[in-house]
Image (cartoon, rainbow, N blue to C red; front, side):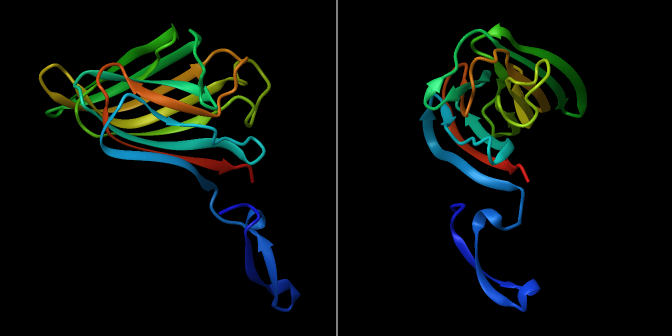
Length: 212
């Protein structure tokens, strides 16, 4: 729905008189669907959502990311975009925390997803399974923008993933953080891509979290 779409409502404070109210002035849920892309049986080298942000309406964004790579052992990387242009360079940093379970044996591990790199991972060593993530995306210029380290493009990932050990598929929980440590570029989208192979399936959906 567009912000200017109108709804007919009964105003209880005005003796039940009927009035038209624009969508932007109605209350409701805090999440607004903004962009999505999906495919099955694909051979996609990357998956992108572009130009879906608006700092005048949204505090930040929640993105649902599901994918299945076609090659065991692929790390999944992300770069930000401004429009259709990649935000490249070696100012990306990423840290990955993993909690694994293989046949009832649980262990944890921390992974350097990238420091001063142009190809940062948010998850490593994926197997040919469906992987599911929630990403909270905080572009530069949204919400709190003053103070050291705040006015950058950054993301926080939480997910269920399957690791390829070289001989087995291992269930794991992933928490990772991701930042473009350069305040000169503003992201309004992103794209993900595997370190090897392609995406066989994917479903990516972005939602805006309303300012009020």
